[in-house]
Length: 464
Image 1 (cartoon, rainbow, N blue to C red):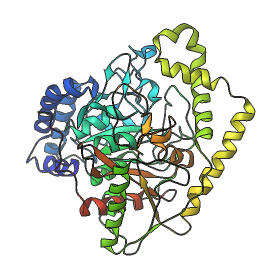
Image 2 (spheres, rainbow, N blue to C red):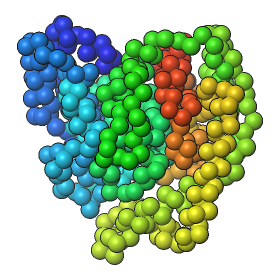
Image 3 (cartoon, rainbow, N blue to C red):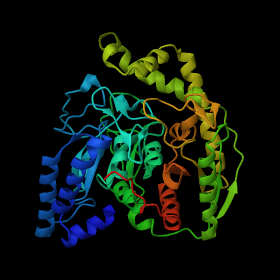
Image 4 (cartoon, helix red, strand yellow):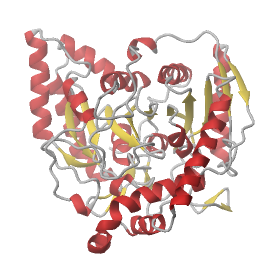
């Protein structure tokens, strides 16, 4: 059931929030031991919040957008009174005294918090495992990764362990798990959803918060609840006064869609991913929209991103390295040490290259409303590795598989991943829909249109 349908049934009390919450808790207790999506369940809190939501309906109180709807929270977001570890031994027993803005907003909207979902340490990589809670598995194939760093949330939504989850995205961390787990996730424009307090690590010019869901309209509903400025985040954007939930019901009459299979620099793409994305983008022509393949030019963005990303980690965690090195993820230690090797000149060069990346993406939007690419260059790969060493039997760099996601964190454009097909093994494939700066609405409208042409929600992982 979609979150939007749940909301209507709770309003009429055809189904109560308590009934819905108990059903999902029962499923979490059954399925979570298999996939390890939730690291800190909060069922006692869930039950109290569900009762409160139902009481508001009975008393005729004004209801929030998410009244009574179960939601999970990524363990990178601070939750007042609820253990928040950031996936790190450094914060294994940390209980915050305040909610992050995004958590406060979903609470104010009346949601029911089911618990915290698993993340790699400080969200540093695109697969989900850590030294406290272990590995989150892909519900479609338990030997594959769920992606990262919102791998716990993506696996939870795909498995029916709640209709909505909150994720973070500094290099693809909403879109990659959405792609690998077969759900919908949107990284809004940078600043659309304010961030405070900042997670332990900086990343403050490329980190985004947003929803993952099984239905596009549910993501729109959650985005309505969490968007809007806040003075504590100097990058937060002014309110547009757009109701996404209502506005996505409108379908643009004319639309020019660009699509690229390389984003101007990516060299290798899994053959099944390529086939499914081409077949999917062509479906937009059924609506009467114009679809054109475009040639892009982008100087390799990996160096710019890797420089800035690793320097951030080095700046924040190097002071703790001497004492905590043995308790940090070994790959995170390598990243910190790599970041320490860059000079101030290297950082400024990376910032300058970042401008070129923005210009390359922005150039497309002079002629097109939307840009479509694959979400990831591969389907979900094996557990226990950070990246696939080969694509189509060719050796590749560590960033080749996520070539389509992190450049959009450098530019701040809104981007979503939507399921667009399945491999012969039965693994989901994701298509990325990118919009102009500040135009989440167009991304959502195009996503909703694709959902109507090619719905995927009837497919469910066989976990029970």
